[in-house]
Length: 581
Image 1 (spheres, rainbow, N blue to C red):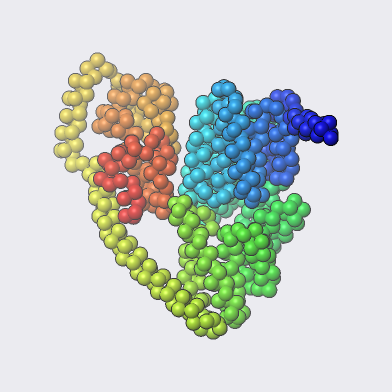
Image 2 (spheres, rainbow, N blue to C red):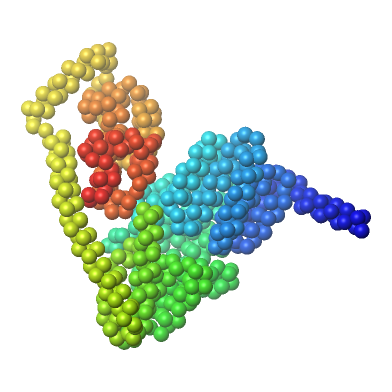
């Protein structure tokens, strides 16, 4: 008996070691690529590849495999498994000796964590992980990974509605990829181009949703989605997403025939590839299309499928929210008060939950752009039918209290906004007046200032000689950099700009001091702060950024120095300025 037990223990012991295998560096890199590409094609297959790599006896291989698996499991909605894999990834990473390979791998892990948090809807957490990861990738000059981080951060900007900045960054990345194609393996180049064109299409589409008079934005979105489809022949998920978005563009352009055909293509492809998320979105889009075409029965069939998937997966997301909004509208038109009331009630409840999460995150997701006005409409539908529905007295009291609470909140909100507007208008007028004074000083005063400056400059630069034509050329080049918003970059320093405009730091400092009456640092900071003020006044999404995020968007290294410069310029903190607006 003891002999049998010993044999079994030995068998288990040996099988445990047998699971670990020797994986060569070449095999590791090949599996890396397979795992990455599977994220855009087949998540299940990606998990298989990751498990294969986990069998390696190399800690580096295991760390990467577990980090990638963490994101893959999150894509499947398995939160617990995702967390387990991510912890294991860092356990294996900690076992590695300090090296450039370890630093590079740390960048990968933070990228996967950022993607995971994004998938969960935690945008601030995603951004924090990208910011950590990009530092490690820069440290080892991992150019390809830095481009990925820059694209992901650009998409955070898109998500919060700062579309122009997102488009600018994504187009820079797109140009970089084209100019440095040799750096990328062929399939990775195709994958990067697929992702970047899909992201650019999304940014242009989102920008159009904020500026519906600018129809050329739809043309740009259509162009990039078609490019994404071209590059996505081997990346199924990207191909389906690009086609889905192209269908939306057709719908916005009133090309109903192509929109409907595209959505049905996506239903087929998503079913074929077991992509439930995309299947749900395609059904919502078809429901939306049929609703506006007044084909209510067809619309309801599609929208019920949306609800069914959301309820099954317990993901009461934007699709579920918008689906119930449309169903309430349809049943209202069809004169079915019970159903209209039921779906308007679901809509309002889900809307409150989504709004609460958005406030916690201090971010805004794209579907929210048109939702605020819809809530009033839903309340009207609910008010119209609530007395026709047989509900008990307790529910009636609950809804009366709810409506009163909403009315009280709206009145309070209006009062607070009025107070804030008065205070903010005074501040803005003061700011405008200060600008006018600086731009149009009285001639005599300007002459006195100029004379005083010249005397000071002569004292400070007695040995410096530079002709006026050269000065004008330097100023002209500086203004060109201003127009290109170069000053938003963190590296917009005296040496960098001097090199950029092909002069030396002494001349540049001298010209800025003479022409603008300030040091180069003051000149640079003033440009950045003016940009922030303009964005805060004109872009409501920008005001939702944290001070750290705003600071980084205009090239400040930390929030403290940015806030200090901002207060010096405006007299208030960035948060006060934003809340007052």
